[in-house]
Image (cartoon, rainbow, N blue to C red; front, side, top):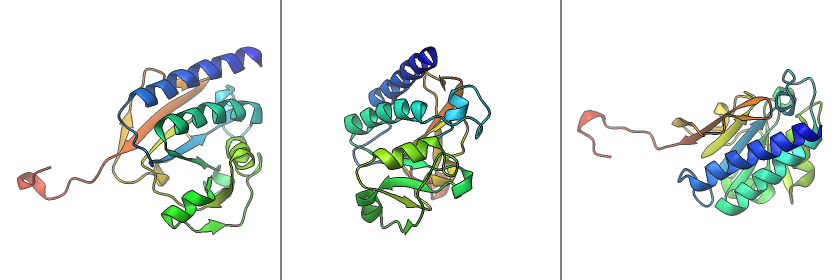
Amino acid sequence: MTNTRNKVEQDLESLVNGWISSDYLEAGDLFIIGCSTSEVAGKHIGTSGSEEIAAILFRGLKKLAQQKQIQLAFQCCEHLNRAIVIEKETAKAYAYDEVAVVPIPTAGGSMASYAYKHMDNPVVVEHIRADAGLDIGETMIGMHLKPVAVPLRFDQRSIGEARVNGARTRPKLIGGERAQY
């Protein structure tokens, strides 16, 4: 696990630095993370969850949140219909309705479970409209992004063995060819 831990730490640091040096995030943005710790470990999604891997990822993502002054949101697995773990103050600020569930590794996933245990005042909500996000292991975060999602290409394309995709959103372009943007 030491080699895996080191690789995950290095991969995540590279990816977080890419986000930090980009102009894709603004203070106050809501940032969704979907993560399969099984995929990070090189296993099939949902088969080998690891709170040890989740801990590494959580620390690195907290660094991103602090540096860019953004709010993190962690997507649960499909067993909780991809509900979202966020801070209670974030839920209140966005008027998101809390639901009654506590994610655990086998129902919610290791990443969401770890986040729930280590956030200041976590709650779970069913839906959000995030400004940007990170999909680690093809967990399909798109349902929680605002329209219009724009895929991002960072130099770091994986964390551990999991493929990684980033996205940001932009306002819709309306009005047709005579409109000015």
